[in-house]
Length: 407
Image 1: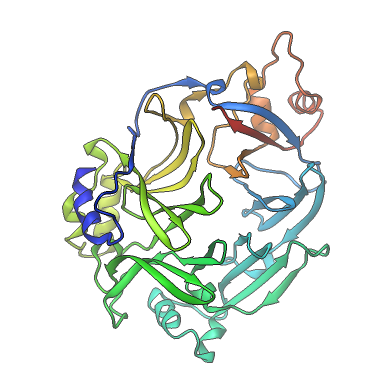
Image 2: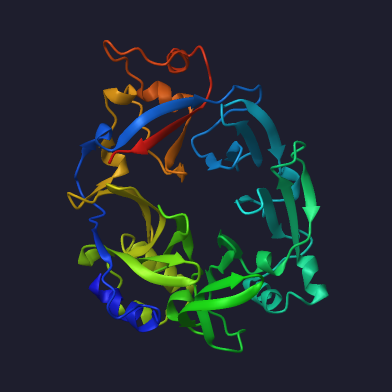
């Protein structure tokens, strides 16, 4: 990634000169293969109670809340809630809210938030920036709507709420009393060129800013919005932070940030230095560049650390990959090339991109079809009755695989 390091070092003001982030060596097209049992441990299956009219699909997303397994089925604009034993609790439909709404889980307040544009108005990207810059003006607050579900309320009803500056400016809960703003975009509508990719808030006040960029004409953000991604680390007081077009993974404790790891890839995956200095003439030229350089690096998204491994996803300009990195061997394995074996009856719990982590455990949502396609009996090892029933088509239940990573 030598081509893109210089621009990053110039703009990362909070890069301590003596910091030496650990290296993670990644070849996105590596042919390395391994058995699943090398990585996963203590696998158990939580069967989700079948419900008439509810069919869990492969593109549905899983979220782990304090009290529930939450399955979001965006295709039908429904949320299904299950208790931690797999018992069905409720179906919440948000179809009537409009196409612009998507549920977001707020772990600070234990609520589901549905926030989006008022369908009575058509907003351009320029309109959105104008509203963002003057949202406290009462006339601008009609352009967005917000609804919430209190997950601590047994009724679990969608209720209308009032959008705030945190909603319109994409300010998200970090941890403790800290929030962060993650959106980066360039536009001539900004009067001040000084923008920051990461802004930290506490008690509704801005307390720190990191990674300055020119928010009027920054080349990389003229035709592409960027978002910071934050993930929990093994330390409850610390979070991982990743940035668009940056190969460094940071840690943040409170409002103090420092580099922790650096992704090292082959030169063919590096963005050229001109990407950071020479703006594209128009969006069509930018789209053409992406399609012709589809394996060039964009950003790390999900990033999880265990004592022996890193589990992370990487977005490229026109591709996406999920990897497990063996710290001792210094090898990155593509999840798609990891082979399920007899320890899980050949059910692959690492496949796909719907794996979430909470409190040290990994969770993978499995459809009944996925189980049937992969399940194989193992001599001398009886399978769980619920899994046998699904494999034999006596049950149409979805399953959540819960596991840890080996040390």
